Amino acid sequence: MTEAMDGGCACGRLRYRVRSAPMFVHCCHCKDCQRQTGTAFVLNALIEADRVELLSGDPRAFAMPTDSGRPHTVFRCPECGTAVWSEYGGRSALRFVRVGTLDDPQALPPDVHIYTRSKLPWVALPDSVPAFDAYYDSKALWPAASLERRRALFG
Ligand SMILES: [Zn+2]
Ligand SMILES: [Zn+2]
Image (cartoon, rainbow, N blue to C red; front, side):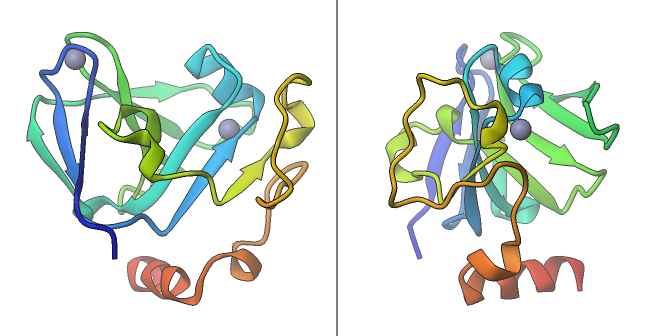
């Protein structure tokens, strides 16, 4: 298991520590993620919320409108507005940590590319990483240990 990784917002007031490797890393090319980040895709590390330790700061929750209508809450530094993680579907036990806010974002390359139907045409994806037009079957793709961790969260 990877050792702990630290991250934080742009102004430095919000700092956090991820205590272990995530279960899986998504690179999402959907239109919501493009709009909300202002760029081509988002990188999310999926990890148990209780493995993310808040070191300083007080993340503020923002309810985001989505194309699907499914709840999506983004947590941001209240001072500088940097988004540090998300919750989807009101499931607060599972956190989607924004990989770009880690001090070493290279540590967590994507395990899958999703919603490539709206991928910007000049983004070239490697053949070595699975890619899907929309969502995917996590049972087929996640390592057994990660599926076990998710079962421990949601039963
Ligand atoms: Zn900040
Ligand atoms: Zn997305």
